[in-house]
Every structure is written in C-alpha cells, then in structure tokens.
Length: 119
Image (cartoon, rainbow, N blue to C red; front, side, top):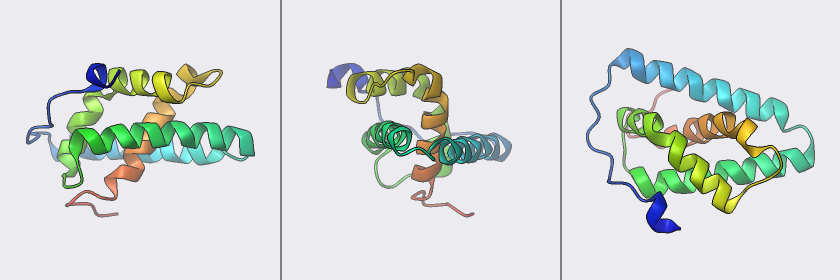
C-alpha cells in the first residue's frame, strides 16, 4: 500500500502570501472544529487517530524542514492521499464525512514546525 501513497517530494512552492494565509485559516478552522467535536472520549480517540495518520503522511511527504508555502502546496494535493491513508490505517464509521476537518487539523498542527511559522 505504501507505493500507492508515495508522491514526489514537494518542490519549492510559488504560492502568494494570500493563498498561504487562506490555507492557514482553513487549517485553523478545521482544528477548532476538531476540538469542538472531540468532547466525547471515543470520538476524540477516533478523530485524533486519523489526524495522526495524516500527520505521519505529511512527515513522509514534506519532511522535517519545510516552509508554510511548501505545506500549503501539499495541502492542495492532500485530498487523494489523505483519503487513502485514513482508509488504510484508521477507518471508522462515518470517516469520509470528517476527513476534511481531520486533514485541516493535521495541517494546522504540522504547520507549527515550519521554518517560517509565526502565530
């Protein structure tokens, strides 16, 4: 299954500052929704397991040294690989309905490691 999830390394992204900020707002919104929906322990465990799967894929794809532009560029491609990753490693009833939120939350958390991160 790993070969289906692999993609070429992220190249130097050429996104506008506005596009990066827009992505960051989406990520923050997804994280807020994740926190709000995670009040129940069982739901929290399921959702955070999915966030962990997406974050692990991000580590594989962008590595440990990256910029917000590179992360935003990967976000534009994330729907297909995040779907494959969650389906393979952390599926739960109704998971497709929460995938966008999980994906955004994972990017929000991972963004904190960007070389150019600032709150």
